[in-house]
Image 1 (cartoon, rainbow, N blue to C red):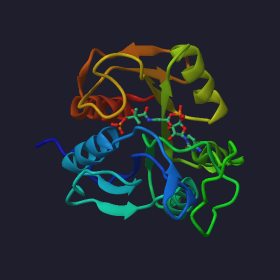
Image 2: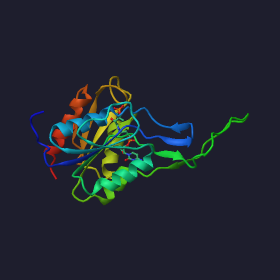
Image 3: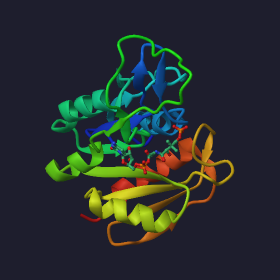
Image 4: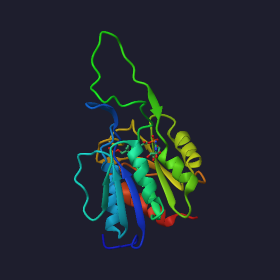
Length: 218
Ligand code: PMT
């Protein structure tokens, strides 16, 4: 990529799922592969940005030329994002962060019994919401993975989390969302403007998001 239009910019990207431990052998997670977030990190790097990639566990190779921070849980992701927030210009949160974690992690493997069982869950902090409260000049871009009422739900998140724009993902569509190489998204601005992008490679989605950042009116 010859156009270094992100030179001098520092971008924090989150990617992948989080893993919430139940006991030493079990955890709660989701279907995120990290492909969308890694595509953004690489596209930003190729356009000259300094990139910090904070990633949950994925099977993808670590991209070269970015600062890579691996985490497991949502709490660890929260701590790392907060640690680096002051030093970056742009945050893009494509990670699929667990909303809940087991209230307690059992130190020993939970044994099977004859009864049914349930695991009490407690809420994780919403990382984007916390960033939205403390942001100064940073641009804050969220993702929304929805299965219903995509636009309505995504629009709510733009305001609630004080985002500059959101990338809304209907994860029920074919060739879109979790663990595939392509995505179909809508970019929704604070003023409600919606740009519908056609199905395209996640790499191209990444470049569209970066283009939109450069066009944004603040
Ligand atoms: O990784 P892939 O397989 O390529 O799949 C890509 C993707 C579907 C994971 C990605 O495109 C996507 O939509 N990511 C957002 C998934 C998600 O968690 O959406 P959400 O609507 O639950 O959360 C909204 C936003 O708040 C997200 O930016 C999320 O990072 C953020 N969030 C959510 C919960 C939480 N505790 N803290 C957060 O910051």
